[in-house]
Image (cartoon, rainbow, N blue to C red; front, side):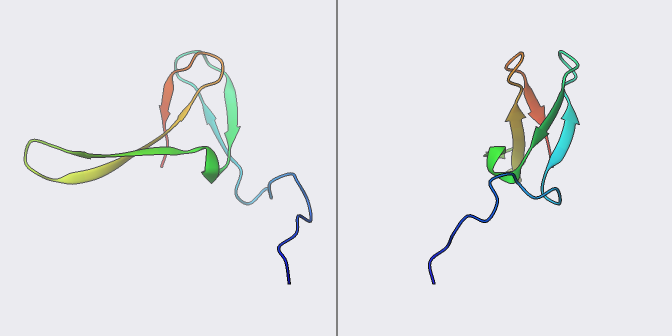
Length: 64
């Protein structure tokens, strides 16, 4: 069976909302919109930073 699109709109269970603290707009995003970057602190501990870009002001918004 081939994968087929049943509905183009993302399911409500994966859509998240966040408010940009820079310009105040409310944004909706899905996991595919999230960027990530691995960084290492001075002690050698690695962690991953997740964010989306605000389309209104281009500010990085940290997300989980």
